[in-house]
Every structure is written in structure tokens, then in C-alpha cells.
Amino acid sequence: MLILFSVNICILVSGQDGIITESDTHIFWQPNNKLTQDDFLGKASLDNQQIRLCDSAGVCTMACTGLFAVLDIPKRKSDRRHLFEKAYFAPAFDKINSYSLLCNDSIGVYKQQIVFDLVEVVARMARKELISIQDSIKGIGAVALFFKSVEARANKNLDKFIDTYTFSVFILKEEGAWEKWRTQVDEFLDTTNEYATTPEDCYRFVKNAPLSKKYIMAPLVVDNLYND
Image (spheres, helix red, strand yellow):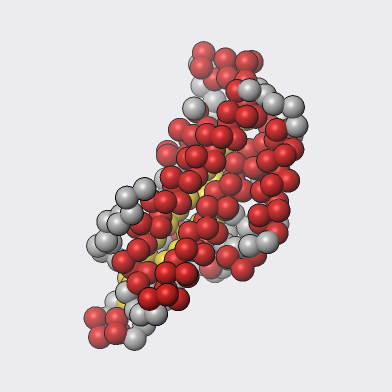
């Protein structure tokens, strides 16, 4: 499905100084920062596939979204005995690759906002899982050991959620489907604020560098340990 495909084409960019959550090309998820028509800067090619999607499925506005993830570790090896590693997750909306075939498609933007919020859902699930792992193991290195596994599970869940959302809203066009999804996503977000993406999480990707000079991006990460 095209919405699912768009998740995989986003590009990491550098940013500016200060705690900011948006760059020239990306918007990173924050609770009060909702997408608008003006955020969809991509130029649609108007090829047959895009026209068919707009005419038959009502997908005239397309958001390119994805989950950005990175692990930072202490720069000095001596610090790795007492400083915890830091994992960052942030939902990203790619303005350059997101497009709208219509001049005013408020409902289409609203439906794509749900897609963006679904990325925040899996980001919170990933943070909760890593915190649980760290609390159970109670040692430095636990986050580094399971980071890639948690990220892989998050992306698998994201694929499943977007597939299901796309099928019910755009393929089957079930009555009240996107309103139902909006309600369910809002309920989840309202009850998981302790795991919400913070401005610092966003800025880690805008800056494209560790937030502390004591840290570096992990040069090697343990591969996925899960079998699911």
C-alpha cells in the first residue's frame, strides 16, 4: 500500500542550535503541533497511480512519515561503567516527500495526521518497553543490548497499524472508520503521556548529533534479538 510504502522513504537531516522540533525538511511529533495543508511541500507527479488513488480510494493527500531511532553511548570508555546509554525515538513527517493533489483537503490532512500520530503510538510503546527492560535488568548496557530489538518491534507494529488503518479507511471505506481510529489513538495518547516524545527527543534528530559532548552515536548496535 502506498501509505505504508511512504513510511520507508524518509531521510535524516541536520538542524540548527536550540531546542527546536522542526527543520526545513522535517516536522517531528509534538502534542500541539498539528499538520496543515502548507506542510505538504512535495510536488505530486500526477502519474496514473496517484490519480487512481485519489479518484478511487480518496488518497489525494499523502504523508511521508516514519520512526527515527538512534542510540548514544558515553564517548569515553571509562564513563561507560557509570553513565547510562541514551535511546531516542521520534516520529518524523517529511515535508519534501509529502504531497497533496488538492488545493484544500482538510479531511485528507486530518486522516494523515492520524498516520503521524500512529508513529507516536509506537514510539511510546518502544520507550515503555526499554524502560521496563532497564528496570528489570537494573544495569548499564541493557538499553544498548535491546535497543535494536525494540526498534525492530516498533517498526513491525507500525507496519501492522498503518496496514490496518489503510485497509479500513481507504480500501474498505468503512463508515466512521477514521473517526473511530481518531478516538482510539487519542485515548492511547491521553493515557501514556509519561512516554511522550519530548522536545529533546526531536532535537536529537534535528541536530543529527548527541545532545551532550560526553556522548557519541553508538558505532555498533547489537542486532535484533527477538524472534517475532
